[in-house]
Image (cartoon, rainbow, N blue to C red; front, top):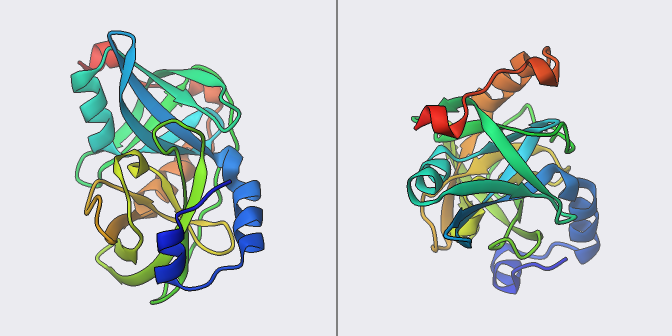
Length: 216
């Protein structure tokens, strides 16, 4: 477990026991996503489970991977790798995509039904360039039109990661807005929650998806 001490100072004091506990309870709900080109990894990102074998990430991340790589795969916190069977659903305006893995694995996140308030602490568990998961945190500044502006610095491997509240519930997901700045912007979970409710009624084997080769 590690976290960014610059954010630790600027965001205010969060007890390290709280970080440890939040990470422990949620680490199995998050994944790293990697793309290979000529046997070397060239794009990294993050994602999270909304159902067993169903991973949410950013559409813009997936598109970059498909345009620049030959093979995509997912790693969990235990460094187990899974192939991606295909795309279940995508919304380019909302910058979100749901992927179906080749196995029914993972622990689904729990969604928060209310809106964040100003100065609420927010947390992210992300892949950090496929070097294992780590936890980082900041504070929410404001919410407008389904987007959260946060005091939380992100890098490229944070794209697609879930945004948690202090209770370990998902309130949003990180996109490529404002990367490498002290201020970041995350999308709310409204669309994902609706999709989760639909997919939760189906058996995993019955959930249809489009393979990457057919999509291209």
